[in-house]
Each structure stands twice: as structure tokens, then as C-alpha cells.
Image (cartoon, rainbow, N blue to C red; front, side, top):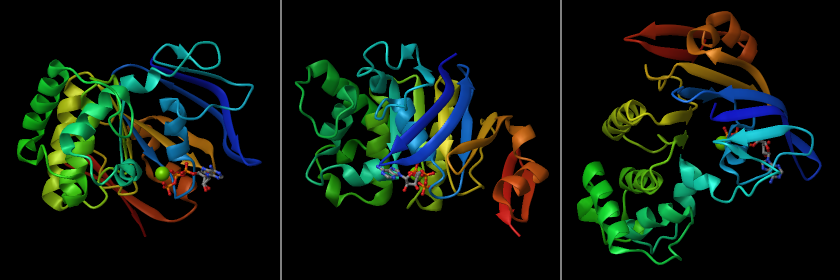
Length: 256
Ligand SMILES: Nc1ncnc2c1ncn2[C@@H]1O[C@H](COP(=O)(O)OP(=O)(O)OP(=O)(O)O)[C@@H](O)[C@H]1O
Ligand SMILES: [Mg+2]
């Protein structure tokens, strides 16, 4: 098991943001995570990443790191994090090479010393993502899609076991999205565990075999994708009339 959360809650400034979360993930599972704005998706993933700590009382274990009983600072080096919010926090003057290298240290900005081998590795990743020509540009001068590829490179350099995409398709054109989907499928074949948060319910690729629905900081339902992404469950989850259909092994959910 790579994630085991038992009765986990999270409170901030007197407000309960996550409540009584029980979630187990086995290696090789790929999860789609759905929930309306403010439901707690990013907070849950920040907790998985070790950026925030759960409230006293529950038990959280991620990749063998037991929260509260062993140092978890290294945990985030095993988790690749790709999010729209992260893309916006990267200093505009940093170069793609520096940004990708910073992924080795799970830092924003490159503060640590890097070796020639690290640089070779970053260059190989740039080659794989087709962004070699951007190597020494400034981040601020890149297009949205180019920025996204740099952030993906930053996540991949530490060869993580888990890769989280939190609204990673925001601002991408239809072809950049297709490239990203192909990359996700390749990463899934490479035995990475993928977590994918989205509001666009036409992004549920066939590789996703599990789904987690979060509402008001609580898990509404979780489990095999086909059991969770079905009409009655989704109508109950959204509290509204929705349509769900499957085409080419992909699910589509629309408000009616
Ligand atoms: N530091 C904080 N202090 C107070 N409230 C917070 C803090 N961080 C998050 N919240 C609140 O917790 C709730 C969950 O936030 P979170 O970012 O996890 O939602 P989300 O499901 O990712 O939403 P979105 O789809 O809009 O990204 C929101 O109501 C948010 O305002
Ligand atoms: Mg969010």
C-alpha cells in the first residue's frame, strides 16, 4: 500500500477543511479526484505531499513515511507535483534548466549545488519533453503550454513514485492537452501512480481505474471508477441533474 489515511482531519484557523478521511491506495492504481471548488482536493494532496500535517487523532502513512513518528521532509522528493498554482509561484527569471533541476530538491528556486550528472539528467528530460530549445530562456517569457512542460520536467527529474496533476490542463490548447494525455499514459505504463484532479470531466482517460469524490471536506465515495462514475452516484454527489456517458473508453460528465 502506498497511501494509508485513517480518520485523517485537517483544520486551519478554526475551520475544518478535511474531516475523517479514510483512503487507501495500492501501487499501480491511478486515481481521478473530483470535487467542486473549495471541497478540499488540493488540501488533501498537500497533506499527501507532506506540506501540511493532519490534525491529532488520525493516522497517515505515505510511501512508508508515517506522519508524526518519523521525519517526512524527504517524502516530497518521491512525489511529482504538477499544478497550475505551482506554475504561478515559479520566479519569472528562473530558466527551464534551473527549474527542472530544482525538482531534485523539491524546492522552488535552485538553492542547492548540482552535479554535471544532474545537468545531463535535466537535459535528457528536456529532450524527452521536446523543450531542449527553451533550456536557457526565462520562465516568464514562456507560453502557458511551455511552462507546463517545464513544470512536468521538474516533477519527473526525481523519478517519483507518485505523480499528482492538480488542474494541470488549465490554459492548455487542444494539442498541448493531447500531448499531456499521451505523457500521462506513458507514465502510467512506467509504473508510476497517477493522481489527477480536474474540473473537466472529459479528461477521464482510460488509464484511470479508481475515483475519489470529495464534497465539503469529506469523502463522498471512492473505489473502482466504474462503480463511482455512474449516474445515481454522481447525481447524489453533485446534488444536481447530470448526464454521464462513455465513449472510446472515456467517461464524460455534463451538467444537464
Ligand atoms: N490556509 C487556509 N486557511 C483557511 N482556509 C483555507 C486554507 N487553505 C484552504 N482553505 C479552505 O479550505 C477549503 C478547501 O480548499 P482546497 O484548496 O483544498 O479546495 P479545492 O477542492 O482544491 O478547490 P478548487 O477546486 O477551487 O481548487 C476552501 O474553502 C479553502 O478556502
Ligand atoms: Mg484545488
